[in-house]
Image (tube, rainbow, N blue to C red; front, side, top):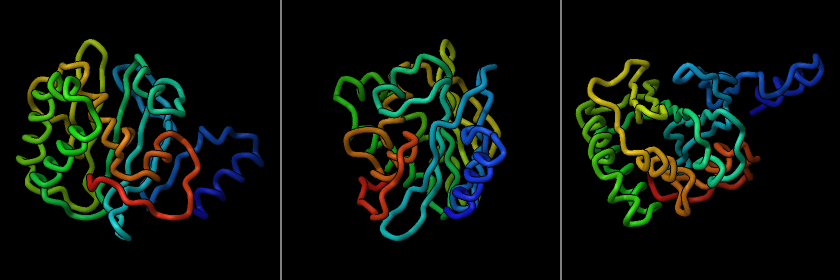
Length: 204
């Protein structure tokens, strides 16, 4: 936290916009921009997923334009990227189940039903990985006209993209929905200041 604050103060002192600085989250660096589908995206926000007092993973959200509300994020028509880096080991099948529950808890029955093939696909991807170890990462990119593309440790997962347009928004609702995995991580992904107290989430 102190290093991030120092970077922002230094940026202000030398006239460099704060958004142009990389963000350090629990030792994981999130660059201010990422290229997805041939477009440069901005880091909308990044934070840590806690479970009780334990740091589970970091997450960063990239968009074509800054968005401060869940509705604005979901309505963004361009490419998007969600990047997660593990801070603890977690069983792949268990992570898939938690994500499935998070998607179901934060979407309507109709949204979840239209996304079911994508839900099953991402659960299958994590189950086949067996374990995501501390330091490993994965990204889910939304490419309009193509679908959602999953990469693990920087390598694209084999197979067709998840084409259902509802799937990526349902996935984002794990963190941005009405029952987010972590309320403070939700604020962080939206670029909002986090409060000092931890709040319980739904477990993803």
